[in-house]
Length: 95
Image (cartoon, rainbow, N blue to C red; front, side, top):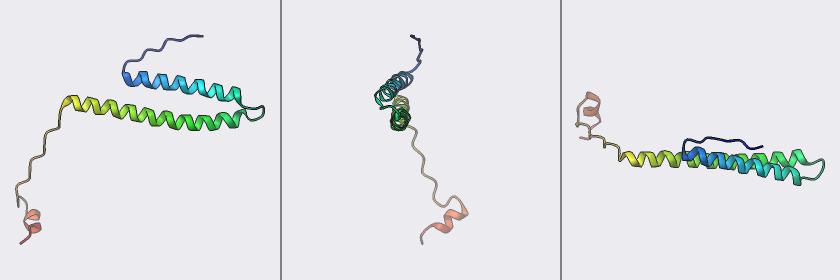
């Protein structure tokens, strides 16, 4: 049974591909598990694959965000404060 999935960003495409690979591997693990051990094998694989999927998803999301930030350019630099502009600053100044 084939389904069509529409992705709108490169990040979504990566995540869909990874999810499909994870589903296929879980199926293969369950198929290869000996009788009476399917659940245990599948659970171990699900935890391992889920952690890897989450790590890759986070990595891809952060890379996409970083690339977008680089396109915008560097943020404006902060301006230095005027020395002793407040009473607290005057007290903190070394004498």
